[in-house]
Length: 146
Image (cartoon, rainbow, N blue to C red; front, side, top):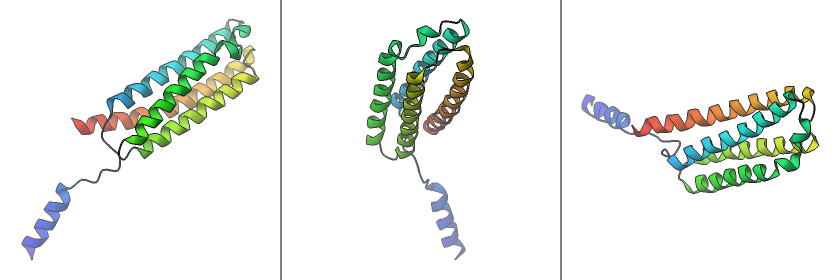
């Protein structure tokens, strides 16, 4: 009986349950690329506000950049949806897409005065939290392959 119990415990310990798929370098780098692009937009907007150049923050000046960012996120979402056990990453990308769309709506309303700097700071903090969670997950997947 002890031998059977030992065999079952040994078998259970040797099996691992994977709740998320393996590390995907393309997805990881894509997330980092989108992160950089979003923060370039936020830093540019904030610097324009601080330097009293709010007119340079006109939404039309950033529209192509928003389209690029949203296209990259959609591309990553499509890729991730084809990978096994990547539903958590697809959810993260969907949340990111929603956040970018929210930022775009706020930008369309206007980010033109120095007072809007606090709005940008809040948005930066929210994106930082979002990207940290995405990066932690990607780093965890990287460690699994080592």
